[in-house]
Structures are given as structure tokens and as C-alpha cells.
Length: 320
Ligand code: BT5
Picture (cartoon, protein in one colour):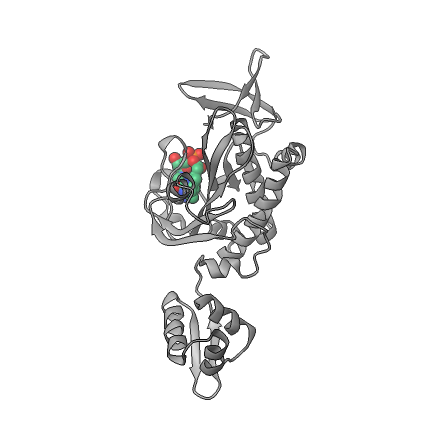
């Protein structure tokens, strides 16, 4: 019911408890209780005895009703599980996808204000205090598991596009899953899946964006390599708006991917690339290879030209 009340509060400057009660078919006391609930969530609502309730301001939280108000996607983010704190949005999203919980359809998201055990790749930790966007998207693509690297690539493109649209700043994509601003990491992507031999069961794409995290807050060992949008821009960014724009971009590129129209995604990826044309060292499992990153192929693999001229394709690794 709080969502309906919010909808009416947004429509009018003032609306009386009586009118709200009539519209929703409940008592005025019930309305009053829901108004208290909204206030506890951080909504500023004033009440005037004669004219009723007025919504003054919204909390700066990633609440589902805030994200969905004005969200223009068809299915991404149409169902949202919100937590003020949890271990990891990827863990919860994977549980929901694995048990095929009711209503957990393609595009369902899990989002949190902070994570106590945020995950990076290969068991690494992801620092996730309040002030970021920590979200996971559940997908059921009818694609072969070989598409997973391409899902990470398209997500990276959706993130840089969203940052550019929302904050007018151009990020760069460091292969395969980092977004950098001013050479520092502002976002990481963790794609996990369950698959049969030739078909994906589900995919969970986890995205972490540092929006308003102060430099001193970052653990010392990563402080110099990380940044947040606020630090880079020196101005506030609405996390809700950024999520809305990101979800829209994500849906657009995901639709292309499902139609196997990879070339546009790759073209965009290349135009934001931080990696191509550089001499790099990549950690692949136990090995470190060095060479020039010359291209990225249709599968999302990085093409590295080694010192002796040999070309190798790298599907997954960490640039050091
Ligand atoms: C990643 O791994 O970059 C994937 C990060 C994915 C995080 C999201 S948040 C929502 C969802 N739920 C989760 O639990 N995870 C996903 P990787 O490429 O392995 O990079 C990890 C490394 O990035 C760490 O070892 C640190 O060096 C650095 N790092 C940790 N926290 C960071 C932060 N907040 N900002 C920038 N760099 C960070």
C-alpha cells in the first residue's frame, strides 16, 4: 500500500487522509500508519490538519519504489529485491535463480545499500560500504555458455554509457570487467552462471559502482587505485537515476546480444577501451603473459600479440 500512497503523494501537492483512504478502500488510521512507515524509511512528509499530507523529500536510498518510478525498461528491474545490508547481492540472486523462486523472472534484480561480503572474481573481495550501487541482475538467456564473456562486455558498455549519460563523464573499459575513470577503478562486474553442456540455466551479473565513497574510506591497499563518481566529478550524482539509466542501457544491449548482434556491442566496447593498443601483462591462472593488446574478437576474447609476433586469444584473465 505504501507504493500507492506514494503515487498519490507525488501527483498532488497536498492530499487528505480521507481522500487517500477512499481511493485505497482502507481506514484513515491505516493510511496514517503507512505514512508513519514511509517517514521511518526516510520520506519527509508533513501533515496539515486542513489540507492533508504533503511529500517534501525522498530518502537517498535505492528503494524499489524509487527506482521503478520513472523506470522505462520492459523487464529489467521490473522486480526488485531490496536490502539495506546483506552479504552479497550475487549470493542472494544466485539462490533465487537456482531455486527458481516464484516471480523471479528474467531481469529480476537484487540491490543493497551495503554488502558485508561483496565478491570480486576468483575469490577476491569487493569493498561495498554505503554510497555505492551494489546490484545483481538475474537472466535466463537461451544462449550457449560461450556467451558469458560477451555478457560481461555488454554490461561494461551499458555501465560506461549510463555513467556518460548521467554524469557527463567518459569512463574507460579495462578488459574484461573494470570501468576506470581517470585511470582508477570506479566499477567492477562479476558474471556468474549455471549451465549444462550447451545451454545456460541462469546468469547472475553483479555490478558494483562507487558513487559516493570518500577516498579515506577505501582500504589502504586499494585506495590509490580506486575512485568514486563523486570524487571524479566533484558533484553529487543521484544513485536512483544512475540505476534507472543503467537498467535501460543494459536492457538495450542485452536485447542485441540475444539477437546475436554482437558487432555493435564490440564497436561500442572498442570506443571505450582502455586496453587496446597497450603493452600489457596478463595473469592467466598460473601463467603471466606479456604482449600488445591488439583486438577483441566476436567471442569477447582479447587478442594479444606476443613479443615473437605470435597471436593468442585470452578468454579470461586479470591485467596486472
Ligand atoms: C570485480 O572483481 O571487479 C567484480 C566486482 C563485482 C562487485 C559486485 S557488487 C554487486 C555484486 N555482488 C557482489 O558480491 N559482487 C558484485 P575483480 O576484477 O576480481 O576485482 C576485485 C579487486 O578490485 C579487489 O581485489 C580490489 O583490488 C579491487 N576492489 C575491491 N573493492 C573495490 C571497490 N569498491 N572499488 C574499486 N576497486 C575495488
